[in-house]
Amino acid sequence: MDKTIATLAEAVGQIPDGATVMIGGFGGSGAPIELIHALIDHGAKHLTIVNNNAGNGHVGLAALIEQGQVDKLICSFPRSADPRVFSERYLAGQIELELVPQGTLAERIRAGGAGIPAFYTPTGAGTALAEGKPQDTFDGRLYVQERWLKADFALIKAELADPHGNLTYRMAARNFNPVMAMAATVTIAQASKIVPLGGIDPEHVITPGIFIDRIVAVADPAQEEMLNRAEAVYPCPTSKPTA
Image (cartoon, one colour):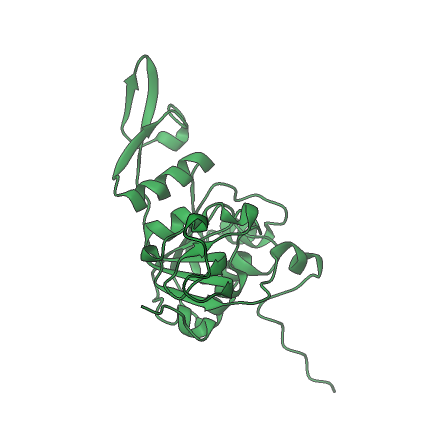
């Protein structure tokens, strides 16, 4: 089955209001900027977003939050290099935060993809993060029960893809993308290059195509850090009319 989609707009066009959306990346590394911006243009609101951090500057995830499209953020690092957008909205009571330790976040997502409804971890046990969650002692140590984390959609960034959705990633961009691909009902991938079937050595496939639903080619993907250094803003502000 050919899973390639012609445009970014078409790729995200079925994401409805109120959806839970996982977005890959570790900061800017592996962040699907073009898919996020297409989601902004699409206009879906009241989203729950799962990401490692809360975005930086005024592009990517930060821009999605700035446009008022995110009601809740599930992440590990709400304070990063330039988190002003999230911070302002959070302090104003306009967005909800669920703070999850990074290893726990990764394991909750992995568990969602593997069909494991819950697991125990010592991380956070006995702290405010464990309030309301089952806790138990194993071999003399306190553990907290964490539930799996799944999503309606995942937006991820790959390096190579074939038409069946088999993916590779570029170095550190691998991070959260593979586990998120497995934990969503619909996974949408942007790839720097889509190669013919057989163009990826099977030994090099990281995410098998069974986990991918849509692929869109983005030949020269933007990098969040470079956009922020250029003080980019998305959507681009409209020019004021001259007198």
